[in-house]
Length: 450
Ligand code: TRP
Ligand code: ZN
Ligand code: CA
Image (cartoon, rainbow, N blue to C red; front, top):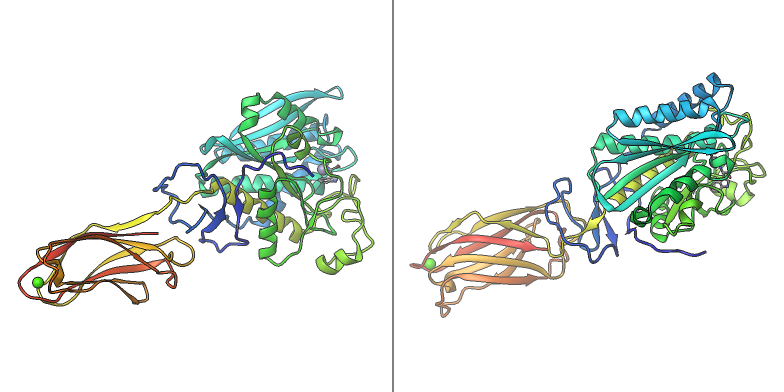
């Protein structure tokens, strides 16, 4: 399988605690460092920092499915291209997105003698030259309501978009969500979208994530084997919850990601299986029924709200949110990020030690083996001074001893400390003691560079 290009970062972490930050390795090495994004509270020691995704409420996702079911029921039983149930589905999703602050666009096309509609929703902000997309086809086949195929993916993408709004996320990349028309007639809507994107805009799409069938009733957990970065984010998330995944093989190119892949855009996605039969080995690791299709109602009239495995849909919704947050918010760690305390602290002559504190938060893991402590102490006889760096747990690292022969003034120096045994986060202190009478001074400022 070819990987046309990979421009997305690779997460090194699986499932995340709600407030955690994780590292992302190997991304955007050339991107400029930024030190003070207000919605990012810390940095990883290597690679890039990202924000953790919220849990996507499965109840909200299922409420969208209930709406899709009602729409089908009220419109002759389906949400197929060319039927009123399709346009009603577009209107429902669009209204939710508009109310949440998205910029929505309905793109019309014509196929099989009727008008089709793609719905595209842009979340304001993010780098317009790095657009991260997620999408799902919103049309059903004409024989049923299409709740698993593909109300499930449509609802997961919708609820993830709404979670972006609830979080008022300020991603590094521009986020764009899409619901495709006429997928069931041959990926018509997504092909139309990609083919009508100006080449410059196409080049700005750094990744497309597809969800088509995310809640199959006898589910498998399949990850698309396409862009390695997207694939890794999903695999890591599933590994983090202890659920094994397999590579999706039930018809590569059978959904809208193919339209993007054919244009050289990196793609990925999740899938819980269609008409193929679950093997005994798969049932052993995933539960469910071996010898039975992943979705016995695939493309049939029984693809209703009863045709959903809630656990699978919940997991895939959370996994999608994780991917959007991880890939969408990753930005390079500012190399050598510093924490400084510039408040003056007087050092009593031949007296007790004084300290100046620095609180480090939001980093992951331990401090570096070459933590740099920059010290600026004004003093009239520097030989009087003993200077230590105190780790958050109180461990002292001697930076400078006293010396009766060192008569120069001031301590302006950067000391390198192997602090790799210390967690980075916490309150670090500079401890200064003047151990000889007469000459005096004060701590002007000091800083730690991670
Ligand atoms: N809607 C798709 C289709 O009818 C379902 C599908 C089958 C699928 N195989 C797939 C979706 C593989 C994603 C990946 O063809
Ligand atoms: Zn489908
Ligand atoms: Ca002194």
